[in-house]
Image 1 (cartoon, chains in turn blue, red):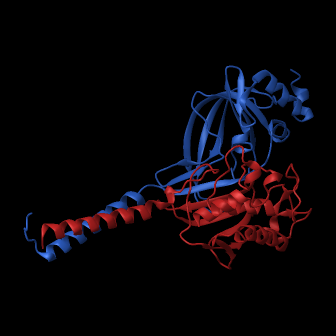
Image 2 (cartoon, helix red, strand yellow):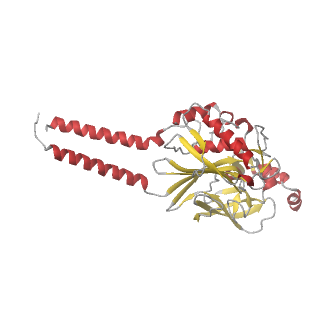
Image 3 (cartoon, each protein chain N blue to C red):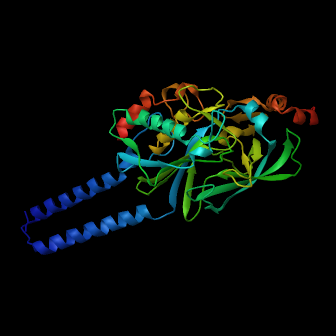
Length: 197
Length: 201
């Protein structure tokens, strides 16, 4: 066995230096990146019929684009900086027969910028190219500002695949034609009358 | 100093580093069997809150009932505080964490926002009741449609978010107050919530 001698002082200095460098590196790795905010809440227990009674539009369309918007630091709406993701949808049909434009931009809560990363567990998620059915409203005095939003968060978005709609209330899918009829029958009377089909 | 001594010292330093790294990484190491989503934690088991803007809520048909709302917040807080865990929420003037009200028209009955650092520790949490056209009620009654909505239930759920519990996974609605949407079977702290609280704090 070797009995090579090393100065005790050098050992201590080296050990302390290694420890400090290691901890500094660890802190730098964990403390860099955007500030993180979580948003969670209790949602209304709304099914499609409930949403049909409350919504402005029930749109069927295809997701064209989505972008993370600028940070909203308005203290009236939010006590913390809020990041939104704007989703552009090419509109094919409004079941309520009120929305006339070919596109709509829907604002959803959450997203990531250089400074902030906002996680929202109940926010609806969209993929570009995805065909969707969404309950859409606008309430300028609300937390979403003067922007369209998906009513009831994730409950108000359905993905359409092969003629079936999939959502929180219909995880195994429902025939789109049947679903549209169910929604239409629950719309307020003026909307039903404007679109008898 | 011998090579044997050097090895001993190296082992000690490595052990200390591993122990420190484990302590730092601890928040993300907990498993949450019935909860979904992220998991973050308080560095303390005594968390304060203050209240603001409660008069704006329409309670039992009219506004201006801040005292009633504050009582329901206290009842909700006590539901968590009375569990076996040492964790407690306490009302404290000028606390940076607060309970208030704001216009939530996109389908939220109430909403919690929480900031946390990159170690996973929370440092700023607030929640708001919806003050749009929603009506609220006090006491233990629960309307299945949430019209009026229960102040106590909503506050209990939001305090669960303050503990950074996210929403209960599908199929456990009657076993947790953290069910995603309004559910009269889940209006107070359940045994699974208490077990979870106890396991974290």
